[in-house]
Image 1 (cartoon, each protein chain N blue to C red):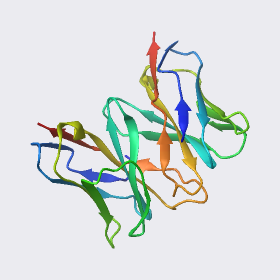
Image 2 (cartoon, each protein chain N blue to C red):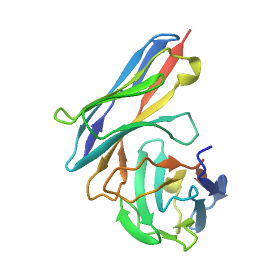
Image 3 (cartoon, rainbow over the protein chains, first blue to last red):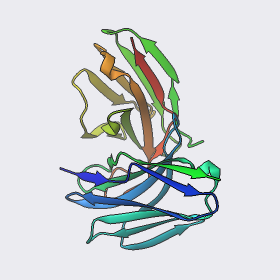
Image 4 (cartoon, one colour):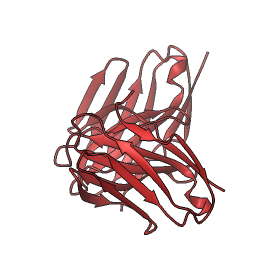
Length: 111
Length: 115
């Protein structure tokens, strides 16, 4: 089966940098996605990694190490509106691009 | 706005009833995915359609069924509803069906409450 682990909650200060980790144990890995979800709203696509390394997209960056089954999402210059749940999701080969999600990390940004 | 539309936004119904949720994918997307999100289960994959054909099934109950029509919109049918079916149901779409992982774009969801 697949197992995806993320911390349940994190708290950070406005203007700071926060790193949200995700570890996974899957067979047939095809890619890793990060989504942001505000309560009661749709998940919003942030980034994805297929190969090892860092992908940067404005204030958001995502890193992947396939050999370690590890990814992180880095958020810089935190804003209050970044308070949300961050979902790590894995796409598997032969799975028709379906996503298997972790339970999400609830990030709270404080003044 | 992701470009994926879902109707209705809210649905309240009684146990034992049947409902249909509707999804229209982004223009140009051929794949439609259905997910269920409940408080205790997180976001769970239900089923994937590509250009009208079923491609993958997740932990979808036998009481649930879906289809994708020639115009690419999709419907999720939930029957013999139980209290535990109360959840947010999301539809997502992407261009492709697999091989390279294509990012999925989510609709606003349908909140189903079974009383």
